[in-house]
Amino acid sequence: MTSTDATAAGPGRAGVWNLPNILTMIRIALVPFFVWFLIADAPGLRSEAGVWRWAAVLAFAVAIYTDKLDGDIARSRNLVTDFGKIADPIADKLLIGSALVMLSVLSELPWWVTVLILVREWGVTALRFFVIRYGVIPASRGGKLKTVVQTAAIFLYLLPLGSFAPWLVWVAFAVMMAAVVITVWTGVEYVVEALRIRAKGKLQARNDKGQEPA
Image (cartoon, rainbow, N blue to C red):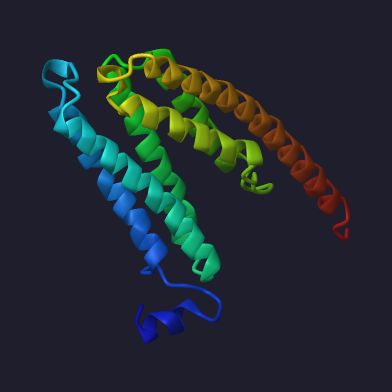
């Protein structure tokens, strides 16, 4: 970041072009490569568990690592920006969503799992916009746990486990089912929280209106 950018950002604020945001952009850029690697490994949509599948595993692992790294750097160096707050969850949803869809396209993951998780993810995003005039729905511990378990489940599914340890496929399925349960549970929590924030906001608005001078 140049001195001009730093001045424009103001004291205690970071410009858009900082390391955490660049890492987020890299994560978004990795998504099409990740999808292409999976397609390249599956002519006729039948996975061959070859070198391209391992390339997809590597791309996913790198993307997930950048997710952790950009958050750690942003917090430790006070580089949290409005761009990062918007782009980071978008990058996460693109990566997780593309992985789930591709696993279902390759018939490795039931479509109902993919649809349920994606409906929950985008539904919570819609809820945030729905109540934004009344307040912000904070990220919960359950939501963070959901992300970790989803990521672990997808990573296990991406690994060509069946070729050398077939029983590990069942481990991947068990972790994914745990992710589904946590996803639904936290989704319900967010709906309840959204309704609470909306009700509180509307009550406050009525009180403020009642206090206005005649």
